Amino acid sequence: MFFFLFALWIVFNGRVTAETVLLGLLFAAAIFAFACRFLNYSLAKEKKIFVLAPLLLRYLGVLLVEIIKATFTACRFILSPTLPHDPLICRFRTPLKSDTARAVLANSITLTPGTITVSLDDGLYTVHCLDKSLAEGIEDSRFVRLLQQIEEVGL
Amino acid sequence: MTEMIRFVIGTAFLLCGLVIFVIEIFGNYHFGYVLNRMQAASIGDSFGIVLCLIGMMFYFGWSLACLKLLFVEIFLWCSSPVSSHLVAKLEAETNEHLDREVRIKNLTAEGKEDDPCKS
Image 1 (tube, chains in turn cyan, brown):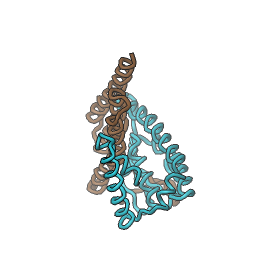
Image 2 (cartoon, chains in turn cyan, brown; image 1 turned 30 degrees about the horizontal axis):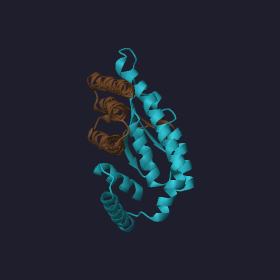
Image 3 (cartoon, rainbow over the protein chains, first blue to last red; image 1 turned 135 degrees about the vertical axis):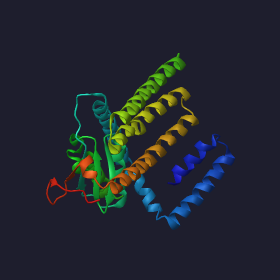
Image 4 (cartoon, helix red, strand yellow; image 1 turned 135 degrees about the horizontal axis):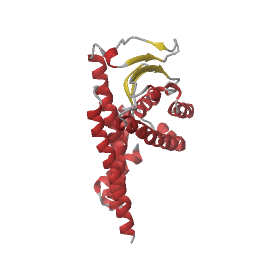
């Protein structure tokens, strides 16, 4: 969070001078302190991000691959006048326990074309799929397995 | 020469993004029901915009502008699903005849069987 805020400051500033760096460090530290005090952030959680970095990068890679694959599938349904599609709303639960992992999964499902998370209530997902083929194995997808690994390390 | 290569790669990415957006617009008219239309729209939101931004990154080269575009992408990917989710939830909760528009299936541990809409 601290490094992200600092990077954001530098990038938005557009210049790297002693003044901008010092001010950036100051503001990033102030916002991080606020987040620790009121938004349940902590230094221990920050350290975990570095441990989780390889898994998070792997998750991002999987997400990108799934988005590309799903885009082509959705394009096929849109462009083909003869290919029938069978829209479906499915409800399922996953073994994920933390709210963060559940929210990340819901976001990933929505980001993948062809599926939209309609609701997430206490671990029960309601997902709209453009075709029933897109719902196959959705409750035990690669996203879920990776998020479970991330949860085991500690999210 | 490097500028030329960057221009060609950037243009290729931008054109691919443009094609995705054209398909998205076509899909919006092709499908009749709002949730299906949202699926068509999500193609551009998640992948079309990435291709366009990568193309622009190639135009700018390795600079702060390139990093700004990367941050734009990160914020878009974080915020776009939230708005899509809210619109979808609104439709699911206000449409009294949702089961006429789309099949509803329960995949929970209680048994993989069809279930009437209870939203």
